[in-house]
Length: 309
Image (cartoon, rainbow, N blue to C red):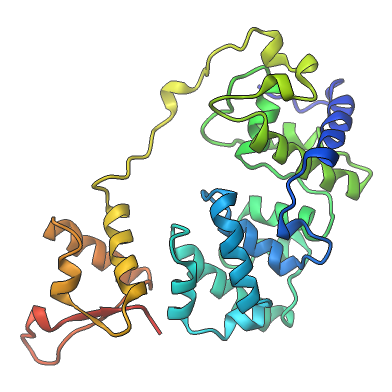
């Protein structure tokens, strides 16, 4: 387990990881000099459980269309969901638009840099608030995504992988690795450690021969012990799940130019009971609008579905 006290390795590891990052960092648009805080926030929301290779073209198209919170706030919700396309978890798109509206209404259209104000925005949790402070504003924060957690678990704690759930103790320990007297250095460490985890210190096939701090990695020094938390991890199935059924419905409605009849929606999934449950959930989440024919006993086949707005 990570220790909350200052680690004698920390300063040297930070130096070498940042030096590695200076050479190997990917040229991503949300890291460019002309990036905006809003663009950084959009990237962080899109990158949740979605790889960079899928996010980058979507982010560019999104920012060309809605470069400011005010632009997204005024957009038709159906257009927002179509633009989200297959990034996954479309509720993120709704929360992002809700966030944009809050930024316009409460902050004059400018994303705040205060952590408490960021956390008060719809859809912004502890990680996203910390990432925006570091990557958009260059402020000190404790940025802990899965990549940073894995780097610290191996280098500092000698563990193969961090525990499935992040704890308060882990956050405190990670904070001890963040420079406390230099905002720019702290933000650079956040970006560099995240990149190291994404490109080198990966979960399944770490490239230890390319790691700039392999000679100080406690996991390597211990002989690369196996994952002590493997029994607590769950793999997430996809085939046959509600997530897959919901995705089929959303894909159909994104492509439709008019409300889709019930029979056409029913054709995308073989299990009628499961599909009905998923449709109810999509409607409740605000992702789908259901238009029922008038009358006391409407014909189910006359019901249509569309994107909201």
